[in-house]
Length: 562
Image 1 (cartoon, rainbow, N blue to C red):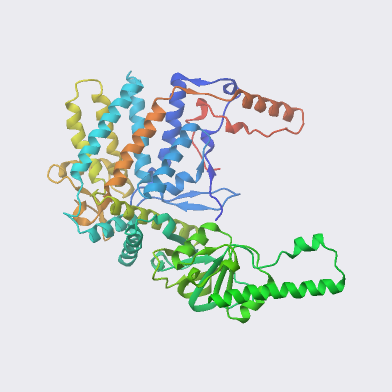
Image 2: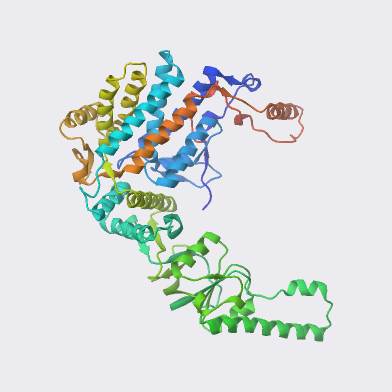
């Protein structure tokens, strides 16, 4: 798929005066804090099962429609260093843990807002960060104490509930079971789920029609004349081309017609020997990463062998893992033990896509989620949901501890952290209390996105937490209710929530303790030279876009997706 990246213009503009300056001290810090907060606020309304979608549109790029915080934030391009830092934070969290990106960004933005208020009160940035760090350490200890494991859930129930919570309103029992099953096969063998679990999407049908294939899927055309369906497939994967090096020979040898005819006969004999070697090995499906001679294609087709041309290395590895086929260098290295197996290899036309399915690879642990959606954009969004759910389930395989979802854990941490902050006798008490208040942004935002009055919902949650520390905002039959999230099966992996706190505080540290943004003087000269040449009507030697230079003056302007 084409890369989907969209430019956030409000963080890129500049004035001519500022192009000659460096931002230092308070100006640099304010610039970074505002830029980071603007970016974090972008995803606030996407939180929860009733989150709102974002449409990122640009003429030269494919349309992106998503309510996933990771997809939205990584789909933006920002030139400001603090904004790029937030994007990298989202990428790091999303690539490792899959889920929890939106919560991390909301908490980061809220902590930066609290830090700005504390700076205006006269607190030093180092003191503010020390208070945040101490509050984070206390919160991590409290969260460990509030987590539950297999003493509350069976391992299977825990993994199923995590998958259902991650999928939100798209959850259904069959899909959640298949996600747990697929991740279980991989994690029990201590393998990497990104390598063994592939996710492919195609438009058409509904998300409920998503299926788990015990094998692999390729988006590829078959050459004309070859079989399009092979049962009990014996699969060979060959790296070198199925052709002769005729072009190199002809450039070095001058042949008369008789010599050329003899050369062609020898060439055909060589191709015939190649095909015979494949037939002797017992293969009836060939995957080649390079050129396949048309005459070899014809010979292979006569023997009922399906031939597939593929040059995408990551897909080649997945097919190898799924079918058990060894990747060999040339046809002369091919042996019977190098062949993989699939119960069925079949070419199908779905909507406008040519797809080859490798199904029934029961011996292998690799599998593929074949995701459906009404349009390409919706199918891509559904793929991200599956990715997040598989990684969330993998987290509880690695560390079988979970906490109550629906804003329950953040509410309880906020209440307990306030009590701990009262014991602090130094100025650190203020940032610790600010940290506790920032945690409330998660349940407050969740309530807002569910259509509830945020202040009433937060007050009700706090009151109910006096008796039950696991009360959160849950959904049942389309209705929002305040209930014990553990009993309702709304749970989140402890490792993801831990990373939410750690990632947010680390991002705040880098931004809060910044006191300078330094520009490359040589680059500024190029900007001025390009401007001078444009005024004279001359073609610029090197195009430098002015909007790539950022300053404080434009950071608070309303942003748009241009």
